[in-house]
Length: 342
Length: 242
Image 1 (cartoon, chains in turn yellow, purple):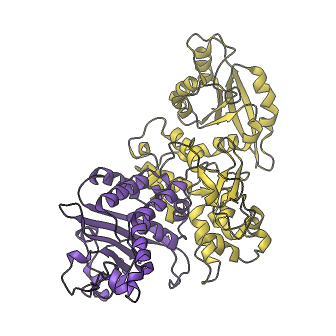
Image 2: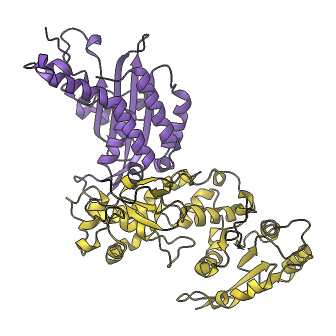
Image 3: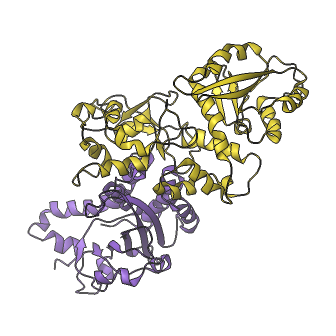
């Protein structure tokens, strides 16, 4: 059955909404989701508009999309999307809010940490198509983050469907604020942490390249044996088919349960003993092009690039621009040497 | 053959700082927080070294009935005592690996000590390698406080101090790195081992701790005056050549 979501899009540029309306309303290919966009084109009557919308919007939206900077607006109060998010949250604490902005591409500096903390996620305009699935996942899964018991950390961990072996570790690394009193923005903060930290930073969860490299395989090799690792697939909030993730500890556990007793203790070598794996499935180091000196790390090709490659750790360096790495997560590495030393 | 106390102290201080700052240690239960605590307890410039680091590793042992990973408690400790002149009187790096996670109920799979006791501090005729590994050994006060039971150790006969096996000297970084190399089945172990900051620290520790040891060994073995003199007896046991 197809679910039709309602998205409220607050922007000072009606054309921007129109540009994306058909794409977003059409839903995600292969998923039973569509949406209806309800636009709110802001004017200098912004506060009144918000009040009117709070009263008239029935049913309430499943997701609010907000532009960050209202450049077309005569805006003496300098209200930003984050201010609007904060105001709306008072009335609608259980509706997720995401930011759509062109500030990244324009090199704008109007984002500060407080702004970012108002949104569950920030997506770049004009590359919104890449995040179509994310919009629907946030709308669909945000209600699951409702606090049920007296211990928020237990609630989060159980919602994540974390493997037993990772639960204590997760309890240790959940942000300090989740240990203290709950407040109105708790659900947003939890969503933000799941979406922006747990799912984006390697540590507990690995993407396909990292999962494959961890097992000594190429991504194609990993696909060959991926059935074995179905139980390791992340199935918690915002789990995406487009960018699947696996619990790293479960990869290890399931791999060792599927190789012979005398398999090597190094996961990169043990993974190659899985049934169906041939030598052309062995991971290859980006620098040496060798599968014998197997890659044991995944690193970015440079600190500005999102492109990552499997590489032997001896060719990596810490990415010094990656500061404030939360406990329990891995620091970003960059490929420091592009060729073997002569 | 063994580093000076001041060098070792600086090294251990740096190691603790690294453990407390590297996010990758965050999943070793309280290890980051404990290391953070030692940053104030352990002086870089004076006093003895007394560190105890408990953590849990996913370890696969081939003798396990279920041939997969199991969480096992590990305790790593260092107790280095200096005299008033700043020389090392004794150093003991200890390791306990439990069969399961809780030291109060678990059997002990391995208990080892890596000790240093200079020949000048020993009684005449007390034969032991100055740097040695001892199997088992007694609990420290810290172990008792952590809940380890005498009954878990009885089958190891902790009173039997011999044989003491000649060994390389240790530091917290060298020992932890060795453990992680042994137990790469733990996914966090992999992340730490490949981290450039950790690799740099280990290389630094090897320079401070292993270089004097191997230099003394190389000098002894390559010296013409030692030709025909047994290395183990004279250098490692520090038995006088006269």
